[in-house]
Every structure is written in structure tokens, then in C-alpha cells.
Length: 364
Length: 165
Image 1 (cartoon, rainbow over the protein chains, first blue to last red):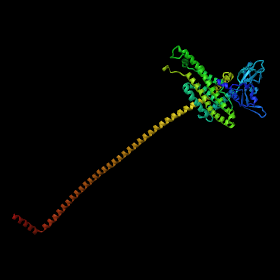
Image 2: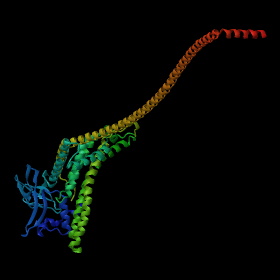
Image 3: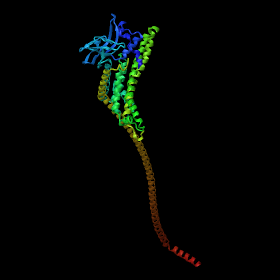
């Protein structure tokens, strides 16, 4: 995880170099910052920026609502009030409180402070983070994914009222639903109990897959690359398999039969750590790391166009970058599906482990 | 950039809330009807396949039955034809025999009649011959007796013969 240090916000950004050289991203550090910025969540929906002939920086996109829980309760305003500032310079005054945005996080300034002051490590000294329930870019992406799922699957469900064979988009979605049922749920959870978990598995599968795919579009979402999102998904899986554990599962986890009594508490500890910490952690990190890495590499390779310009000239650099990026994007499309599949598959596997009932005729 | 520092509780909460809503709504209005419909259809397909298999078997049975019936009918026809032929042959031979017998009988009767007629005719002829003979003999005798001299001569001749003896 220390490799992400490479994208840490450099000192230069504090000075606002985006403004200094018309927002051109043309050095290694700037590219690193740009990628790091993209990987983070954002409070406005930003498509691209350009500098007009008059030298004015223009941002294309729209602002999203900011909803925060401050020391004086719920406060909400549009993100446009920050004027695209992400370095704590613009102060928004609401309910007598001062808010600012530093690296995609909203801070509430201390009572008598008028501007943010930073310490050596670039941490704000006179402001603290607030609980941020904003409709951020990621939340916006989730809503779009949810909407797409509603549209697609409601129409599929409605289609069955007309006939047994779906038409239109349903023709594409139905085999996927059957795929999740027959390749993921049934073999891992078992014929008897899989039905109960189908809503969760299907929702999670399509949720992750759609968000992964949306992340590959130029809209620049990076939802499944947000640790909060993957953690939430993993915790859902954790809660589901912990609350649905069978008697056998708990017996085998907490008091493993057929093992010397002295070892049983140790085994129980290891099993619990495995189920409560390691398994969800592996779920959340796998998805997060794969998507983050994918986005970083695609953007980095795309940036070769700028970095190789000096050595190879614009056409060659663009060509190299184009084909490498194209190649990677194809892989990323595969990864988008694969990660959704793996997450759902492992969730089903863990649920299957928990709900399994052992046949005691041949005890271990 | 520490990723745990980057963890946004707000985003986590929003995601959890939206995910629950999604699972609930999709589960109720999409997954349940979709899975039920798919399952129903699969059952239908299974049943239809089974029915088709049954129908095929039934067809095969019917076909076998038909074949058997056809064979039986053919055999029956064959037997009937044979019987008819036999009856015909028997009838022909019977009638032939009867005709023969009848013919024989008629011939015998005819022969008997002819014999009877013949006998009668012969008897008649015999009678007539007898009568004629008697008449002739009468006439001859009458003639002979009318000539006395001749008679006397004859008698003399006869007497002469006797003397010789």
C-alpha cells in the first residue's frame, strides 16, 4: 500500500500550480497528482477543464450537493460554492460555521479561524474533518448504477408477464442472472439454501460490475476503487454469513470436534479471526486494489503520450500510448467482470461455508 | 496518502443505505419475479421434454402395436384365403364326386331300363314268333291235311320206314 505514496500530493500543489501554468498537466509530478486526484472521490461532477483564449480556466461538469454533519447539525449547500478549490483556500460560510475542502475532504474550521493553516506535513492545524454525507461523485455513480439496475431488471421482470422469453435488454440480462445462479450461488451454497441469498448475490454482482464498467468510461467514476465502498460490500457479506451460520458451522468454528481439547480454543481463535477479519479484508482489498491499480495504470499509460513526446515526437508518442492504453482497456473490461465475479463468488463461498450442514454419518 | 485516512465514513454510510435499498427493492420487484419466472420456465421445459419423451415412447408403442396388428391381420388374411381355397377345392372335388355318383346312378338306371325293355321286347318277340309259328304251323298243317292222298302217301311212307326198322 505504500506504493500509493507515489501519487501523494506534492508540495507544489499547495501553491496552486494548476493555476500558474494554465492547468497544463505535463510533468511527472503533475501527472501523478492528476491520477491521485482522479482516484479520490470528488464533490463535483467534473468532466474536463480547459483554458479559454482569455486565459481563464474553465471547468466542464456540474456541481453536486454537499451534505455534512457539522458541530451545529446538518448543513447542506452546492459544491459549486467551493469554486473547484481543493486546497483549503475557499472558505464557505454556513450557519455561522466555516467550511473548506482539502484533498476532497470537507473540514470545519475552528471557531475563530478565518483561514486554514497547515503544519509541516500539510495537515490542517485549525480545522477538523466532518461527517460527510454528500452526494459525491461516487454516490452519484452509485445512484446511476442503481437506476440502471432498476431500469434493466424491472423491465426484465415485467417482460415475464408477457411471455416466458424476455425481449430487448432482458435477453442480455437473463443469461447473466442465470449465470450468477448456476455458476456462483448453486455450486457454492448448495441446492437447498441458495435461494435465500440470491437477492444479495445478484445485487452485489451487478452493482460491482456496472460500477466497474462505468469507471472505465470517460466520465471518470472510480466508485469500486473507494475503500469505503468495498469495505461496505465486504461487511455486508460478513454480516450475512455470520448471521446465517448453521449450528454445525458454529460448532466447527468454536469447538472443533476431533481435535485435542487444548488446541480447540486456539483453533477457535484462528477460525474467528479468519471469518471476521481475514476473509472480509481479503474481499475488500482485492476489489479496491484491482480497480485502483487498473485506473492508475490506464491513466499512467495514457500519460506516456505526454512523457514520451520529448523523445519520440508527438505522433509516435501518441501512437505508443494509444495502443498500450487500448490494450489495457480491453484487459480492464475483462477485469471489471472478473472482479465482480470473484467478489460474488467468494461471498457465495463464505456463505456456503457458514450455512453448510455436515453429514455426521462420517464424522471427522 | 494513507488509504485508511482516505476512508470516508459518510460515503460508507451512503453506500450502506443505498445498497440496502437496492437489495430490498430489486429483491422484491426484480429478482424474485425474475427467478420465479426462470424457474417456472425451466420446470415447464423439463415437463415438456418429459412429455415429449413420453409421447415418443407412446408413439413407439403404438407403432409396435400397429406393426403387430398389421402382421396379425396379414396372417389372418393369409389363413382365410387358404381356408377359402381349401373349401373351394373341397367343394369342387365333392361336387365332382357327387356328379360322378349321380351319373353312375343314372347310367345304371338307364342300363336297367334298357335291360328291362330289352327283355320285354325279347319276350314280346318270342310270343309273336310263337304265335306266328303256331299260325304258320296251323296253316301248314291245314294245307297238308287238305290233300288226303299226300297224307295217305306220307303215312304209308312213314309206315314203310317203320317196317324197315
